[in-house]
Structure formats: C-alpha cells, structure tokens
Length: 175
Image (cartoon, rainbow, N blue to C red):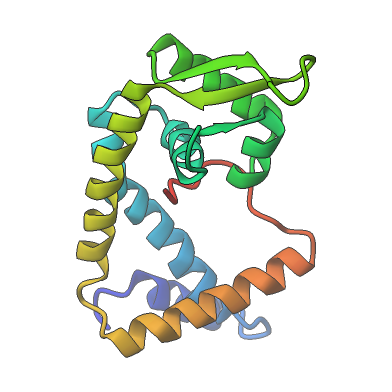
C-alpha cells in the first residue's frame, strides 16, 4: 500500500538491517498507531462532558455494577485495571463534579465505598450510548466475519501478554 507507513518502516529496516526481522512492527506498530487514532476518535464525547482520561471508566464500572452502583476503591481498581492511587485521583475529581460520592460501607464500618449520584447515572447513561454508537461507526468498515476474526486474534494476543505478566495498566476508555 502506498499509504501504509508501517509497511514502509518495515521495508526500510529490512533494507538497513537485513540481519533483523522487522515484521513484528507490522502488528505492534499498527496496534500502537490504531491506539493513538482511536484515542482521538473516542475522546470527544468525554472531553465535551469535561471528563479527564479515565474518569468515564470509573462511572462506567459503577454503572455496570447495577443498583446501588457502589464499589470499594479496591474493586474499582480491579475492574479498571489501574492502581488504587489512580482510582483515588479519579474519584476525587468526580466527587468535586457531583457525579460520585464516597461513604461508609454498610458491610464494614471501617471501609469506604464509592457510588454514583443520580447525576452520575444520567451522565453515564448518556455517554455510553454515544460511546457505543461511536465505536460501531468506527467498526462499520469491517464485515461481521472480519470483526469476529479480529476479536479472536486480539483476545489471543491479550492472553499471551497477560500470561507473561504484561497486563494492561492506565486509561482504557472501554466503557
């Protein structure tokens, strides 16, 4: 392809260092390039709602939990694949916006839970609709068969990486 910069880079490395196999770049380079493109494509609704990177992940994790939409910081950390420190920063921002609250756990008076406020539920419900529609639009160019194949291959790559202890961290914007 004329517009395939990754293939061009692989070709250049093949020419300059024929002793190396640069073909992993055809996959890893494209995944990295897609991650950057997807961030640009998926970020606008969250930015318009004045949410920082990762803030929606907190809201979505709580909303997916069902009534009463509460989790501990540790549970949020596990569901969002980030540290409890990252959870605390995000929760503090969302408390300031009135989208979540922090309260004493009914199960353990020493513990604290984070819960969605009514405003948080409403915003999350609106944003998840936009987010999923946006993702569907992004994937519209793939056939159903292509999507199933890509899902299977990405899951296999994820299993390979996580089995080596290379689990994901940071912002996901998965929803």
